[in-house]
Length: 271
Image 1 (tube, rainbow, N blue to C red):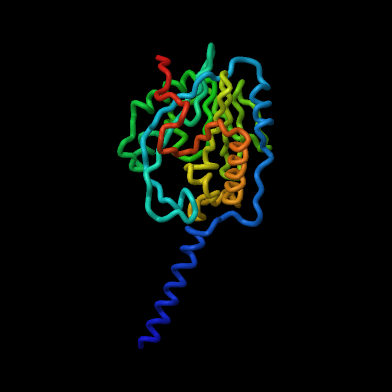
Image 2 (cartoon, one colour; image 1 turned 60 degrees about the vertical axis):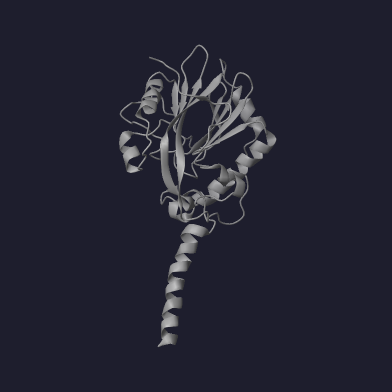
């Protein structure tokens, strides 16, 4: 009886542990992975390609926090949910309209994600600036970035099908990453004073992603994007390579839990 019970316990352990390891622990990147052919020289050249004033400041709004299981952020990081911040950013441009990166969180989405500290006033400021913005760039199509869809953006920049970086405005370069999600992208910004930013979006959700080069676990993968783990790892390697080439550049991950250096709080008042 004891031997039979041990067999059943071992079988149960195997049945549980194999999918647990596969979906939550194992690095989903397959085969050898190489960084993308994106260089700081190329990004800086694209940032200078369009005439006109470059952004002079980056401003931010913290919309609130939600809790996400660690493995949904980084494979093998653990089952415990951790609080992550949800941000939107404004690029102010002298003499012309601003550019918004991410549109915030709608009240319905905040409720769905149990954002107890959701800030509707901050969301109102984001919506107000979007009404005047020349562009609203959504880094990916997740609900924590798309904001109040009843407030239309003047121009929401989609990911380019050819996946090559291209200038959106003077000093602002979009870097499509459709292998991560259909509309995923990174944004490189070079301000008037030469300070550089790289908004990583879904490519790097938290700073720890860049430290260990692990994409989210398979449990978090989308059915409509095959090999997203491999693509994410390639972009993590690319971001690290860009940062090595430009060590003073500020890399902004999707859910930084602390204030970003060289970023001012609160969106501009366009009332």
